[in-house]
Length: 267
Length: 328
Image (cartoon, rainbow over all chains, first blue to last red; front, side, top):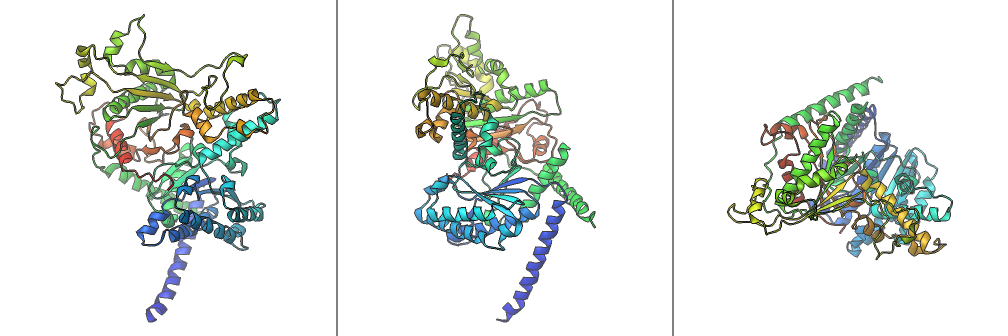
């Protein structure tokens, strides 16, 4: 009892100091150029959970909290658009229990994000669910649409929550809608260009600027069917060895510094 | 106090730069395993993405890239990699495909190639579009082959050496001195290699070309395809085109390499326009500290005329240690 009485104000002071330090670092980084669009592959929740002896479900929950934290950091840095690979179409291959747990988590968190005063509202973030929506369970889809509707007039930043998503699905859908609109407008006989396909991508339709940085946590150095089109040219690919739930501002800082070095070297 | 944040940022950058210099100069990577070492897994298909150096002239870049392809093809053959894709954004390699073919054919083959003998390796160039009357071009159903596609991929298949000229195979010894095969055993066959030469055109524009082909197909199939869901391609359909015989399949491992000397101490990898469709599950390797490689390379007197073998071996080592969960 006594150690707790001593340690909890201690912990409070420590947390306050950490928060102030974080804000100070953000203010410093913001003084230089900042990427317009950052994408995250949220990898390593399960390995993180196993390393802590936690059930996988809790790893995903911690992963969500960290997503919220990183989203907030990005918005404070003036990043205009954040995309996150929350669930891949390939993830449906996982055990039914895990998929159900993830869908339930998604539904809860989407509803949580919708609440007044929560991060979307606080920072004026427009949420867009990017992916093959009809694969989502009805309740999750309903929660997603609710969040989208509530935030559709927010204009400070865009949050692309990619679920369930694969890049090939996105590209194929873009090819579909391109072919579809050409079939509808038979007068247009011009060549189909890459730019036309790009304009039909879900990220373009949500109004996202071009991708500047892709960050993948947990040390894996692959794109795994995420934003292949958007990454393909001059997006910087950053592979961090930290597991996603532990990825923080200190891991993000060298990524921002690398971006600034690139911008300044071109100037 | 508005000067404080920029000042601290400048300090932060100075410190960061110091860290990068330190890593560049003092980092001593473990020696990579030899080419022929048994690794837990080896890529079946390797991609080499070459980035020219804007500080040197075009000709130097071209020579460096061609030499890098030739060297890499040799190492692939030794390491047992059967398929190599080489990419550069501008298409420098694509426009030198004949040169590459000449340099990659084993010496015995080039001796035998006379004017009237058929060349044994097959080159598939990107097809030119058919004349405006395309009534004769075949429809693009999943089972028929697309004929009117420009996918920007040049494919060259290098055959085995024919066993008839055993004495001539000794001319190949020079390029294969690192093989495990003891020198006195006659090895009549050189491993086959399929080479795909790619440029920016093989990527996003190829997807657009495929879309065009599907559109033409849909328009031809029936006057009003709007309500026919089968008219629109599935992922598998698009894949069959892009990874089919006029395209190229997805590589397992990609090495992104810029011609030295590299301006930046350390910069994160960029794909430079490499075809997006095929990079889905590709392991990406890029030397994080090129200056370090430059300083510590195995033979400092070696002419920096191409990518170094150590970098190639390091990429293979990294590939062998990568875990693939495939979504599960």
